[in-house]
Amino acid sequence: MSFLVPSVRFLLAAGGILATIFAPWWLVALIMTALSLRWRALEVPFIGLAEDFLWLPSIGIPLPLPLFTLFGIVIMWLCEPLRRRLLLS
Amino acid sequence: MKNLLRKNEGRATRFLVATTVIVAALFIADLALGGLLRERIRAVMSGLYGAASAIESRVPLAYLFASRTALQQQVIQLRSEVEMLKEKAAAYDVLRADDASLREILHLASSTRALPTENGIAAPVTSSVRSSPYGTFLIGAGSLEGVRKDDFVVTSGGFLIGIISDAQAHRSVVSEVLAPGAHVEATLGGASLSFDGLGNGAGRTTISRDVDARMGDIAFAPIFSQQPIGLVGTIATSSAGASKEVYIELPVNVSALRYVYVIPRP
Image (cartoon, rainbow over all chains, first blue to last red; front, top):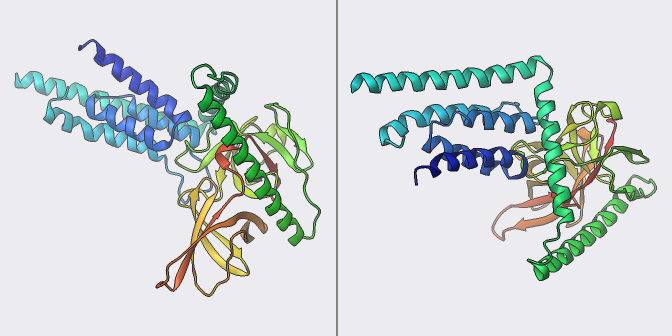
């Protein structure tokens, strides 16, 4: 069944990109978290960047921080030692 | 074994650093280029969203879910009728208060272009409204159609939905006035209140029990040139409390909007 693993990761990543367009934001965050927990998913910050490029306004919120890009970078770094400790990959 | 492990760790760290640097560089490059990258991405996204919407409207799935589809269509139609009636009534109240004539609702054809109309520039909504974590959505009209940053985005009944946040060539980002986390000063029945945005055109405030607020009252935002931002939909009171929670909402379902009007900020 190991041949399925890259496909699952690809599907999740593609789903994450499509979710930035069609799904609520929390689903994108969920997919990013799932990817980071299971794999060294370098695509996660890019999904966050896509979310911010699509939706981040320059006015209207108190501070237009690219929250999803930051979330992607932070979760990618945080999950690396965690995954190593749990020997997930 | 230890050396191999350390070597792998070093390689992994290099990958993470490289990814972080590339992402940061892309973000900074976009800022430096005046939003060029995000404009391209938004164009692709709008295209995908438009294609998906077209497919959804043309493929009825009739054979698979015939009765469900029919019922769903009926519910959607009835809801839109109710919303239309509510909005018409609210629009009438607003305009009577302003001593102006009733605005006519323009029946737009299935065009995806922005059209100049009596109510402002009619622009199609080209993205999902619920997807954004920042309370934003995209419309298919930009600076070349006369849309400017800070312009008002209103419903056909004149209710303020949002403000133009970024105006690109043929596309603009709208920031909802009642986006999640936003605070808007508004007047309701003569009282000045601060509403917390809940997203999707809804807001909430807590007021004293003494303040008179009734269902259907209209909240106006002085900072947005006294534009109406919502109707009182629910009033939650507890018998013991000295205050009550007032929820306002737009008379239209923001997620189901196909067209909005852009009017210049006075």
